[in-house]
Image (cartoon, rainbow, N blue to C red; front, side, top):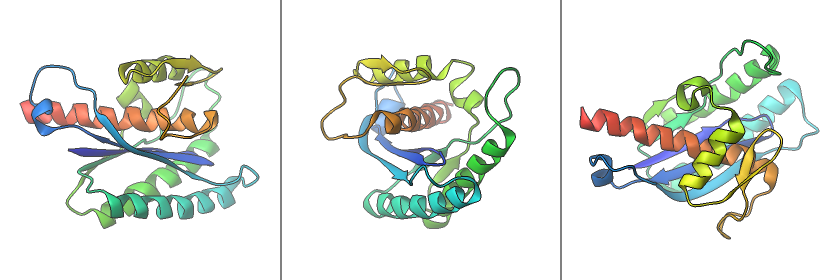
Length: 193
């Protein structure tokens, strides 16, 4: 089973394709999926607001068409957005912009992969209230990659050579991996019930 995780961002939207053998889904042993492919749809940070949203949607469509052309995807998990309460720095305007990108990714995927399933969980649904750097470090450690912590996220200290991304891209790539893994775990619960 192949799952595509998508972490939307205004400048670096991340895509992670994970695979797990169906037989592994039916066991009660925790599994570690294989990472088949990682990439980002990226635009210049000089673009802001609606111009950035539109440029990201165009860049994301291009990356998704390549992914979909190369791989048979069974499930796509696109991070949805949610309102944060308390001291979160997230502004409503930023969440609306990310929602446009999430919606465009989901729409493009479903219109091109009609036999696949889609999920759009909020951050709280797929990672709970665990802070981003801690959750990302757990994902990386489970993959066998040592995590290094930046101020507000974690990234792999020494990723496999085939994944040549900068530290800022890893901020979103690790979440895309986490989203895909969450989707595969949800499939386990459905398969076992």
